[in-house]
Length: 227
Image (cartoon, rainbow, N blue to C red):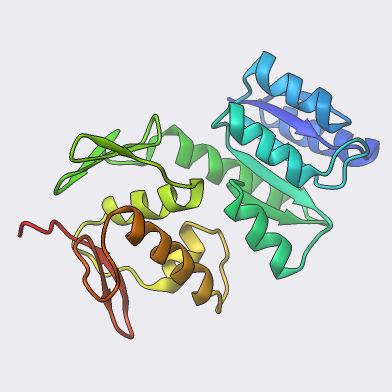
């Protein structure tokens, strides 16, 4: 079972989530504001954080950025903010999943199990190599020709997802569902923006691809340029 930190200012929701997760055997801690929550992330090193965005001392989106600066702990955002802009921005900032209030206990349990499964190691290898790219999943580092490539969290997630499926054409809808956790249509612009940024950092472009190739009308794939 995992240690879970709940950062939520609503006492009733905090208690419900804590009781639900404790009943599943998880070790649960809670904080009612952002700064105590950040301190708990640093001191207690939880396996998972459930984060509300509407906190009394600091907006949860800002807290998420602060958490990402000090920890790779998976974060499920659970909030009343349900518009697409907030969801996409929060996932791009490093959240691992997004849950809109009100949510059911069974949905929360399923999301927690899914995130923990991913973290606990469905990846085929801690290090992926495609051509001159070395992708270190544990440390979230990318090395190309001996030098480190600085990627945003979502650029890394996107590259890692493609690298785990080399030479396979991955549809944009699948990328939205698995990388951004957005299981609905639309959002191609989100994928395209991140692909463009990733290509630039890998020293290529859509017009002259080396690693990332677009199959028009189908999706994208990651290939070894030497093949």
